[in-house]
Image (cartoon, rainbow over all chains, first blue to last red; front, side, top):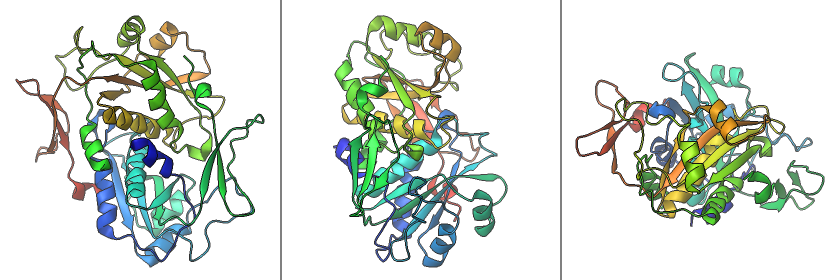
Length: 190
Length: 190
């Protein structure tokens, strides 16, 4: 059931770093995105893959992790992603991705990763200029998202947004990550 | 397998209009979007549901169908969607959806629809001002996408983008809808 896969597909930020993800797996995940809808069928997204420890380390330094966990600088060595997929838009093919292409692609990729027993996080807080330079990405491409991937090493639980309305995720003393979700009735206007 | 579901989830624009989709089904689909990732966990998306023939007809008049099929004004009466989900962003909760929320949500919903034997199309070419007025949508919400849903009544085939590089979908004399997709190697920069 898709619902089970969607429930399993939480945003994970700590991983068994020694569990590798190979390039063929990353290519299969990108293929899921390739076969997903694209606004005006323009297919302007491009992908950079990384499953090499050195390249992973380079990418890692340009990411800002978990904005709401202010005392947590991101996963420690040993708990970092074992792979990344960098989503770019080719500006010669599309002016923007306001139609949602990057979200569609990212969701297909993360669901595919969950199905394969992996997990990850869509990261939008990126030092884009620094990462472009570090990876020698030509000017025509714009970085949209970085998908961090690995074998999840944390428990993520969903709960309902409380009366305070706070949507900030938080981590308890046992390291369990709590994510408040708005109830369905609040999302449906009519 | 997710890949099979993604392959089945083509963009359909002609439907068995008399096959209804009930409100409970639409709510289940929105719940899949609710349980999907949201940038900064802000969850700013809201949803308007329609499975009533009169409301459907109202929504239909504000949509622009299949930009590349210039001689086709959209599905004829009898082949129109039997339901819609209108995706809105609540601007009091998020300034924009550049993180991809609407694409993530739309992909979860369409995959869910495919799993249930339905199908549809993410429509971004919308007379937004007209539709907002027709549905009495308050100013704080912005229409992002309209998801047209129904029991598909057409065959959609994927093919490779040819040497011309043309990505425009086209319909042959038998009414089969052809969608050129860029090959995987073209999408992966490294």
